Length: 207
Image (cartoon, rainbow, N blue to C red; front, side):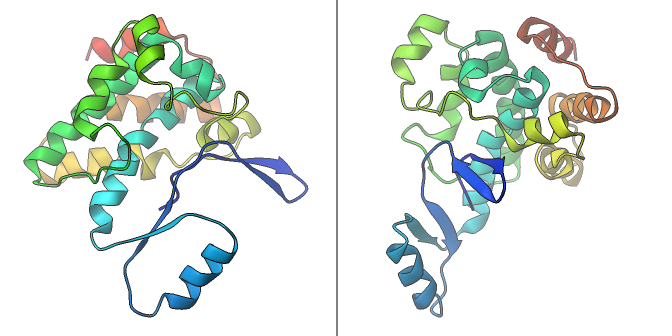
């Protein structure tokens, strides 16, 4: 699991916009791989329960669709309360489903996953004080989904928000917030549109 933002700069150059450790399923035959990553000075962590790690990262990656629809750099988007409230809605829906499915997300951030939506909904001045690390992002960094929309590529929306919808189906439930974000991103794939925080929030809160 790769936790950090990577931007393609062209000509085979890639830029790491945020930090974090790489997570890999623990296995006895990974000694050479661990040594290679240590030599490259890349933080590397072996985990037994990769499902918990993947769901924890997916909760954070739910912002990809919101960032893509905003077409703003990540730092600027997360500085706007309405966009954060949209992310909180998507995360809360997912957390409720995970609880029903008895899946506990791993703790990848200093703040446990279940508390992040509450922090996202805080007014801007308080959020900036509490979430300095969350906003410690390269000012130009965007989500890969935003990059896909900008160049007309099909996005990975089905493998992010779509996983939440799939989990809901397995539980004979629905995930209307994440389903709506899928629909909006797929519309933007064929007809690019920039959504303001207030308009996107209105779309999600009327469900």
